Length: 393
Image 1 (cartoon, rainbow, N blue to C red):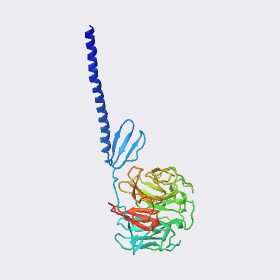
Image 2 (spheres, one colour; image 1 turned 120 degrees about the vertical axis):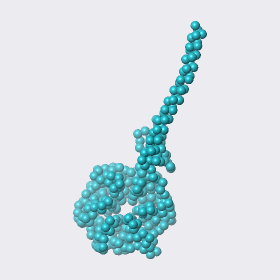
Image 3 (spheres, one colour; image 1 turned 180 degrees about the vertical axis):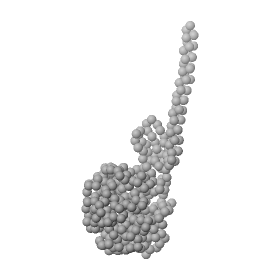
Image 4 (tube, rainbow, N blue to C red; image 1 turned 180 degrees about the horizontal axis):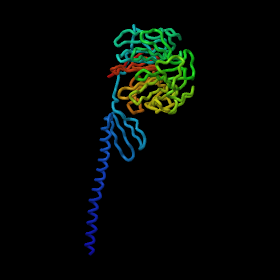
């Protein structure tokens, strides 16, 4: 009897020894299969071919070709997106006109790669056609300051519409000037000449503007009032504008999602639900603001904090976005151009080295930039009073 009982116990031990490891192995294989399935689904999503997601119980790791970011469950990862391997020559080519350097605070380029620059220090706007050797004056009088319908006072930005009309942000004259194609005298379409203020028919040292795709409306970064104001491009001096971003109360600034802090530059994003990208120069950030909304979402920089690492900005001055929705920010005090890949708030330095200088690989207090049709980059190297061209590689 005892012998029979012993054999029964022995058989149970043998069966358990075989079954338990097998169960564990099968369980592990099932978990691996679930993890691999998550990876396959993620990597085949549209415009996410470089994204690899590995899911575990404790964290999620997102990898791309250059960085790895680990996020705790429930958090938002910052490294994602597709096309983000663009590069440019880091050695700039200085643009010349009659052997003299061109300078600018902001640039505009049209569909045939004609370049326009607002030169605040010389109070004029220049035009340089593609492959041309010499620039021409298209607004203001070179080296002459004034407030009549010909002269300008520290112009900061320029735009040219499809009809060849030129718009100039005449900063220290507190107005927007429009020069109709074929004429030489400007008309004021926003602001009151020489009168800075907080009323809706006034501007207070505006720094930049943007236009909708039909050039029907312009959106002005009204720095002194910490707001963005919309005007019709066919309005006239003294017309009230409409506040579309910021609190709209004169002089009230902040670093929250409902306020602006010294807006300098603005871009109209017709490809992204008609949002505005607004550069908070004083707030060291870039905020995305939906038209008709009462608040925005910060997309670059740490609001109110300046530094020089990859997530910080220091007095940003301009912003651009490419066809792949990567964003480029010109930093005045960090003397560089940062690229932020689509859906990322981590910047990569593509131009400059973070130290001011006058060599061909350095910038000094840059203020603006544009791309031509071949994605060559032009930068207003304002502190060096030159325009630098960086070839697309």
